[in-house]
Every structure is written in structure tokens, then in C-alpha cells.
Amino acid sequence: MAPRKPVKSSSPKVNTGKPGRAAGGRDTGSGKGGGRPPSTGRSSGSSSRSSGPREGGPRGRPIRQSDARRSAPVAKGLGGEQIEGRQAVRELLIGQRRKVKEIWIAQDIDPAAIIDDIMQIADAARVTVVEVPRRTLEDTARSEAPQGIIAFAQPLEEADFNALMTKRNGVMPFLVAVDGVTDPGNLGALLRCCDGAGVTGVILPKHRAVHVTPTVAKTSAGAIEHVPMTLVPGLPVAITQMRDKGIWVVGLDDSSENTLFDIANFATDGICIVLGSEGTGLSRLVKERCDTVVSIPMLGQVSSLNVSAAAALATYEVTRARLASPA
Image 1: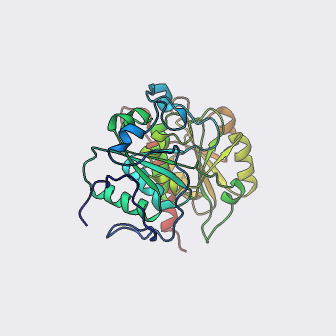
Image 2 (image 1 turned 90 degrees about the vertical axis):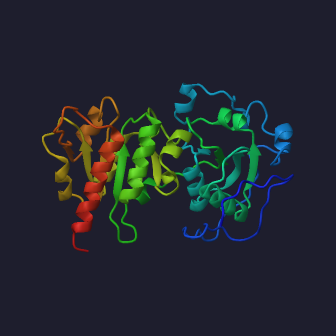
Image 3 (image 1 turned 90 degrees about the horizontal axis):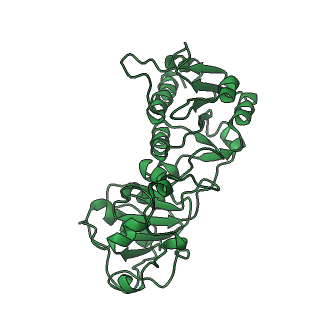
């Protein structure tokens, strides 16, 4: 089907069919749609210029965001209420884990297959799609490049920590814990790696760490909709709880003489990889609680990798060992 721009009309176009992908995509099954949008009284097309978003933006946010505001950690819960970027919005709709309140699309957006896909799924799920001036959309955005689309949804629901520590569907726990990562781009890329490698859960500290901001959501390319995440008050205590459940806890730190390739010794059991912050690495208490600490061999002139690259190497080392192990 040829890509199309959103239909300009006095009311959003919806239908009552079941959500699905365009030809060649995944089936999305039955979905949850509807719900009250972030603000009322708007419609698509030219009327959105006169009755569109208020000066303060959705939920009263100022329309001009500073760089500090764009990267600010979410104060409570996982976050994820504002999703920006085409792939992230599509995965939000496909995931069907939470209610999507409303989608904004720039009035001058160019036709593209992924936009057509988003429109079809949104129509079927009865999600309101509103055309807004690009300036309004970009002023409301909190990531650097929203790609002409923003979705507003209910916050992500936290996974149960105890459930993440148990074997499910024949798969031993494969967890990643993040110690003090504050860069949203790094966390988003890390979550994308976790989704690809088959990680069964990600553990984030409640404090002194970034949660799911719009930048995290966009950089993850929608992985936030598929990777279970939980918040814990303190990572050292969480590590002790995992060890009590028989889960091997392996920290990554440049100072260790053990290498990343030693992970294979623990990979087929329940395992949690612990990754440190961008600057200081693992905190002292976290490092002391780990069963073992390994390092990534650095054979060039640069002394270390950023946390998302380290996550990719470590998680896929676990995946490699599990795939090589007899079922």
C-alpha cells in the first residue's frame, strides 16, 4: 500500500478493526486503544492551528526545553509518558502494554512507509492522531530529533523484581543491572542491546540514575516496550537478593584480571551482568557484592568502552554461551 499523509479532517479517523501491521509486518493481535488524550478540543488538519496545543504544551510543559530539561531523569517511576521518533512510536503501538492517549504528527511530514504503518495501527486501535505545526511539535519534544512524531501514553509499568529472578518458560534469568548510568543515550542504546540479546529483565536504581526519558525511548528504538524493567531502592541489596536466589552476579570493571570471556562459566545458570556508570564505573559497594568481576580486553590505545558498547559485548557473550550449550 502506498504511504499516505494523515487525513486532514475535523475529527480523527478511526475504525473498529483489530490492530495490525502493514503487509510484511508482525501481527499485533487484539489491542488496547482509546483513552482520553492529554488535552481536549483539538482536531487534525487546519483547525489544529487555531485549537491546537496550548502555549504550555501537553500537561503544562514549557514549549522551549533546555538541554538540561531534555536529559533530566524521571522523578518517579520508570517514566515513558512521552515517546518520540518513528520506530519508538510504532513499537509503542505494537507492544500494546499500555494505553496510548494521543499521537501528534507534524503537518508537513513527508510520506513514508513507517508513517503509513503507524497510522493504520493507530486507526485500528482507536488512538487519536492530531496534525500539529512542526514548530509546535519540535518545541514540545524533549529529544534532539523527534522525526515529526510524538506519542503520549501511560507510564511504563514496572516488572516485579521477584518474578524477574525466577525461571520462566524454561529460560533461566538473564538480567542486566545498571549502576548509576545518567546518560539517556547510553541507557537507550543499552536497552536496545538487551532486547536483541534476549535479556529477560533490566534492573535500575531509583536514585542517581536516568530512567525512561524521551531520549531513552527514541534511542532504544522501541525496546522499552519489550524489555521488562524494575526499579530497586539500592543495587547492593538487590545483588544480595539475587545471589540468595542462586543467580550469578558478574560485574564489569576495567581493573579486573578476569576477562569477559570467563562469563561463559556462569552463562547457562541464572546470571546478572552489572554495568557501571560512564565515568566512575562500578561503585565500591556494588563491586564488593558481585560474585566475580571481569574486564573487557582493550588491545588498542583507547582505555575503555562506553556502557552501551560494553553491554552489547557482555550480553551477547552470555547469548553465545547459551546457544552453544546443549538444551
